[in-house]
Length: 323
Image (cartoon, rainbow, N blue to C red; front, top):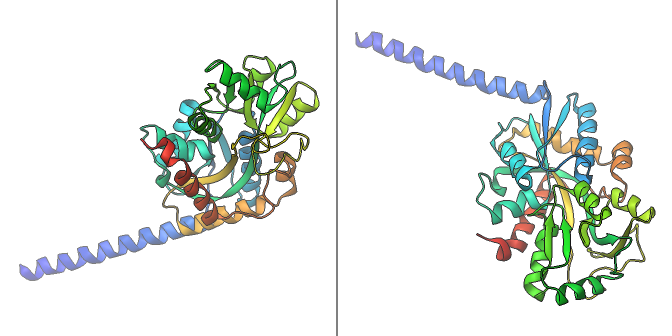
């Protein structure tokens, strides 16, 4: 009887060993053949803005490069939280990836009780970096950033400034400025750049703190919008006559970084394929043509560098937003 039990125990252990080995082999084979089905590309913003353009350009390029189809899914509810929660909860197999910027990845979970945190994701590379600026409608009475901010000082909470998302880096920069300077704006969050520009064109808001992107550039060239100041380290390449906010006397600066992310725990072969794909696509002329050559960094920021950029953002804004 004891011999029989020993025999069955040995068979069971051997069977488990074969089962584990088989699963490991299947997992490795699956990673090597990735992708074998369509990939969901989660987007935390509405269609029509620079982030959407970036996601679709890279999605098309990655699909051709890797031999799969990247399906962009716009989920802009909750300032991008719905999209990020879907990404965080997805299986880490490479079949759900997502674009994220400063707000949904770093700022939103810092200032709200959400079902995800920055630690739930792993970066795969930087796709684009978009500078920002202050702009007003063509018929605005404000001809400079100084005039706009002076009006806000004289009329606390009355001067409305639109921002792309309640917890975007642009909104957070203005909140920081309000706290440090005592200037009180009426912040108007929108679902993204497209809605923000529409509000500006209709003069529904006094000004916009917007991404310095092709859609804004087109409206400036048409005379519908006027740039007041660039909110970066240097003047805008598109609007060199507009000073920086710092030149105008205000310490406001932010850049929207568009990173590709996946749920933490991707198989190494899959993450390497995606990271390499992002790098290749960042040099693709079609991708650069769609996004704009001044928005795709000349030097590729890999997964590690991108992860660090977003970690630095958390360090920078934690004193302001920590719950």
